Image (cartoon, rainbow, N blue to C red; front, side, top):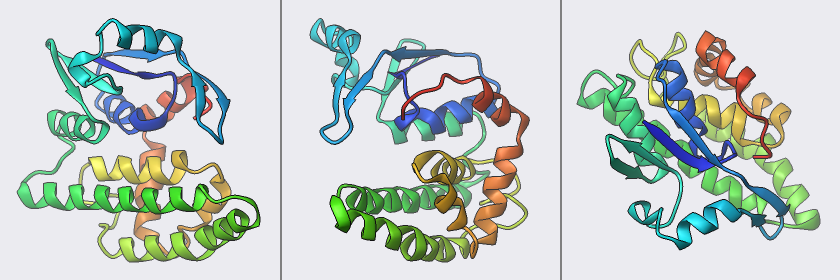
Length: 216
């Protein structure tokens, strides 16, 4: 099994954490990347560009991430997450649990999209937007989501699932402002329980300790 992406957390850190929890040995292939300008997303990624130019990425339509398993290429980050979760028994015990897990992950995706619109603002408008996001919007979204999240540290069922790991990465890895993102969980005890339990898993703690230090 080979996971291909840039030398970054980005779109694949949830997958890497799933593989860490499942104790899977795999090739974590990382294209070198250098961020020149965050505002314009200007980056240097010479090795990636070279491989793309000669067709090495054609089975993923010229994009990363992709996961290669037994010479089969699986692309799109969310598809990869679902595949890995299902393969390693972290996608529910039945169709109903699978649907609940998937729904929670889609809510998180909605919140990320909403946040990126605020992040794209500039100047005083961005400052005000960020204050509103972390003090009102995100706490409200999490409080609502909390009604769908199970108790005792598991979002669905009684075993670690894709939605557990998705909530963990969202709350602890996604935002630049870690302090305010964690504070936003104050009225979401079930979400907090999931995030804390996943964070205490030995395999997760080890992965975070040993993984490369990357800009995003």
